[in-house]
Length: 88
Image (tube, rainbow, N blue to C red; front, top):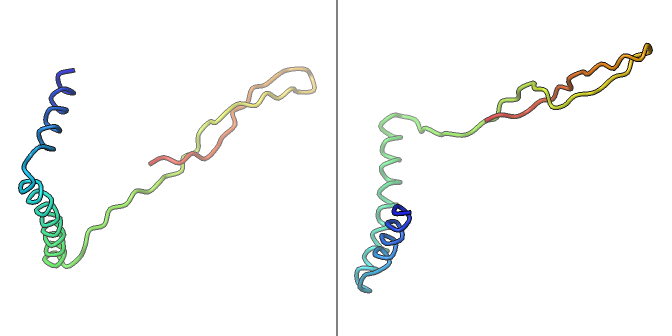
């Protein structure tokens, strides 16, 4: 509860400020974004290659249900049904 209150108070204080402070904050935010992109490009050039991350899924064979099979002699057999499931 105190954590939520504290975060709310910080958000309220961050929204405050004179119009000049709000303008400076807004413009320096864009400048920080450009500087971050520039740093990334410089690191790519220094390494000689770029690093790209992506997420891939790996299919796994898993039990996804059961089938009941009745044999000719009347016995009921429960057999697992297998399916491919994607996992990250």
